[in-house]
Amino acid sequence: MEKSTKELDRSHEDSLEVGSLHPTEGEVTHHIRAFQKVIYDYYENHGRIFPWRETDNPYHILVSEVMLQQTQTERVLQKYEAFIKRFPDFASLATASLQKVLEAWSGLGYNRRAINLKKTAEIVVEQFHAILPSNPTVLMTFPGIGRTTACAIAAFAFHEPVCFIETNIRTVFIHFFFQDKNTVTDSDIMPLVEKALDRSNPREWYYALMDYGVMLKKRYRNLNKKSAHYQRQSPFEGSNRQVRGRILEVLVKNQCIPVSELMRMLGLDCETVEKNLLNLEKEGFIKRKDDAITIG
Image 1 (cartoon, rainbow, N blue to C red):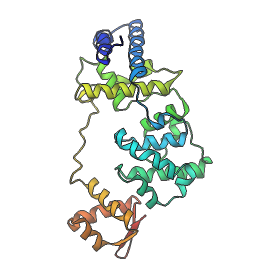
Image 2: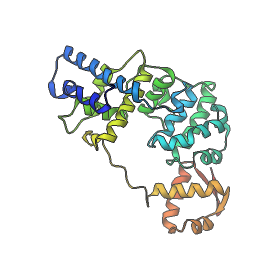
Image 3: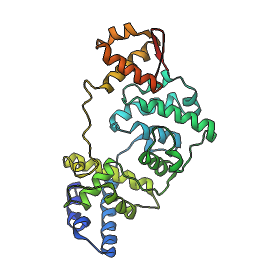
């Protein structure tokens, strides 16, 4: 009979608490191999299926990784394939109007990612002949792409054996190796990430780690609070982020609108709207001419 995920996990917890044992190099190797087996066993039976996992098209994976920044997979699933269908490659995204891109992005939030994605497409077309570079250092020069996203693209699109940590990966290593420690830094975790990496198949290994991390988060609450990098997300309701989203939502539906009409439609005080309009203009989202506003 197949073991449950809970049985698989608990059967190895004692032997995998490396952080509390101060083991020798040989013991670490043994623990890492046992750890890899637990992760791959779980993935074999419970791995999640997503459309971006069915391809190694660099453009498709770039789009998915940018969408997945700070957004749950369920919401990305609702938008990813429609976005790819509307903008199937770097050239189509680079030449599209920002209004069309924001229209396709609507509902994902963090709209700055949409403009960064479009700018990245423009750079790739103009400077790299529409071919996405595989080097994470180069990818990090593109707008909105930090080290984690760059390494994820390198691993998933190009099968590069790079080392990176994101929230689900962090959860897994904290759970197995740092159960006795309350403040865990990524510098504590990274040596174990490097030792555990399946260099022959980094793509599947990271998918497996992430899926195990998702399962752990459902089973145990607040594991990532043990991370020194943990930050509670600020409330969305009533935030400037919500106001910006509402402004862009109105502008996507109305190509050009007077400021006074925008104020009326939003029903917010003038100071709040003006502050957010100013920021949106600085970031290239909107343009103002006289009393009218359009998507930039």
